[in-house]
Image 1 (tube, rainbow, N blue to C red):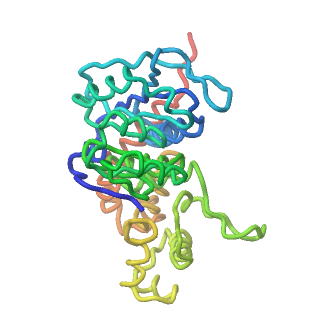
Image 2 (image 1 turned 120 degrees about the vertical axis):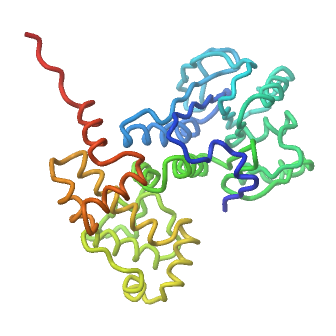
Image 3 (image 1 turned 60 degrees about the vertical axis):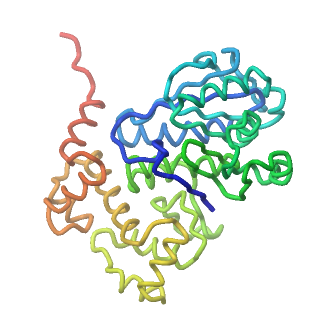
Length: 341
């Protein structure tokens, strides 16, 4: 489950074409995978978009490389200090967070909260925010193993069993994979469903069985499709990109009503069928725009659009630029420099 309250106040989750900078305060004995769960979806979004949508900076309490539980130190970009910066601050912690919860650090977090547009507790970082009294009277989540202890230790905080919680200027997550879910949600809210879907493909897939003859559909990677009927519907969508199935026909082939299929999609992946279907087609089209020299009319036809103009309108609405702008911008970046004369 995902918990939202006062979502409109969360500038992190608003549609924007501006670059988003994030500061990560990483505490000792943090897992590598927890750091990666924040950074890698953002890196993937930058790579797929071909532009710097996100930039991050790793800070530590003393500016020194941070030791992790994997015995691999992470270099720091600087020391965490209280400034008037409004950049969102993510506090990352895994094990033995109490060693870092010094009066000085708690005071720094409390002072930083006056300026930061968002402060996030990532996994055990939630405990640090609670210690600094930054979660009083608000819902918050922690790792499932710590839920009872957290609820007992901080009765002034509304402990909830959700994957992540967004409440105004506070955000908490319950572990590494929920943090990936959070970052995908940030990308979806800021850049749209299509880009978030493409980023999710970089990280995980759901394979229905171990039979070698079972096809792997990469386009649906990263989705938590709890209902096999949704999985079947997504596969049918992927098989019918050039000639999209109308919702009623798609539902009939699954064996449910169109209304019920809409409900299943909303419950399973948080988006209606038409939104997911359009994202699949647009992502396929975008890859063709970047990787081929096909005309936009041919790409439109190959991805189920009635005309090049209809394709261009939908493409711009999703990616905030035209197909020609994407092709020119990204190809300019990968063109080799002319040899010296």
